[in-house]
Image (cartoon, rainbow, N blue to C red; front, side, top):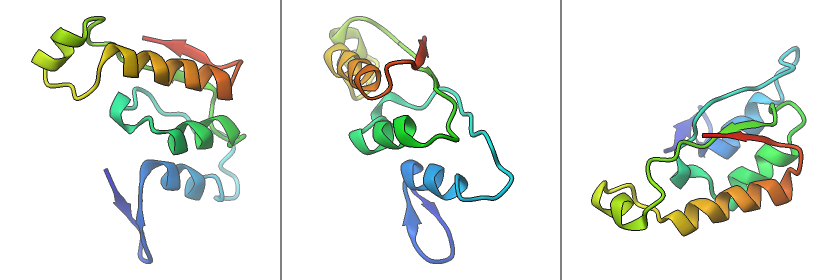
Length: 98
């Protein structure tokens, strides 16, 4: 998804970075990003932004790529696992739940 401010289109990663510039806003916490929105840019912003709480709830619909396809989720179990491993690589102390 894209968000807009008055000057440009923003993706969720851009929005997190923009929020972190707000003076007095010390912690940014969100829950359950859609797995398809967890691209490398998002994971890097999540890991490197000190205001973002290092807790990630990754909703797991099924451990079967066949079932995920039937559910039209748009990702495979391998892709999901890759995202979790990449997140752990970038942010070793992250708390991951599902």
